[in-house]
Length: 243
Image (cartoon, rainbow, N blue to C red):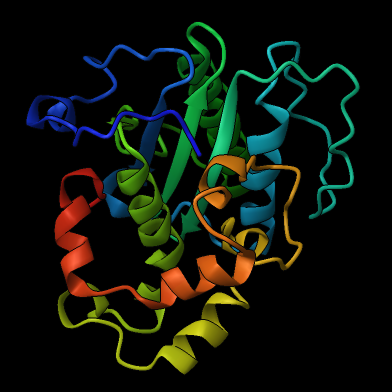
């Protein structure tokens, strides 16, 4: 189990954004952002692959930018022998116009460094590919501290269920109506860490799943936990979700 506090995050912490919050080593944070003007920032599979590759590659204090290198749409290049991680990526989910990350800071200023590399690198890639210029994301990324295990597990579940919006746009208001359809969709949605959490190898090198997985007896238990989502759970984490 993690050593997180059992105290629910204060409203003051919930209201903090990246400009105010003081990132501390070994603490967990929900990091999220969306495209400027809510525009799509992932247009095809190559974009998703590129961002996920950057999640791994830029999470390295020893990494020197080399953004001109081709990436073949997979993670075959993830073989750094000098990995010096800035953060621990606990969970992630990419949606067409936004992303969610759960990060634990490992080094002083690690989250800020990592997010600067990630935002700049992906924006450069996207703009060059699409012959555009200017900001891609909606201002500075948002960050909320996660202070207890219950919050962490509920938030991971919300993040992993988030893609259901693509097939059931009203799920947050009306609940998930067809779990069979939902499970089939989620198990074929590659752009999150959910598959690795339920034992389907997808991008296992990107995340460290130990803290959340330790809260469950098995990968099937985490899947069962996901399937127990109720609308009241959205109320529990409503202060730390992207709306």
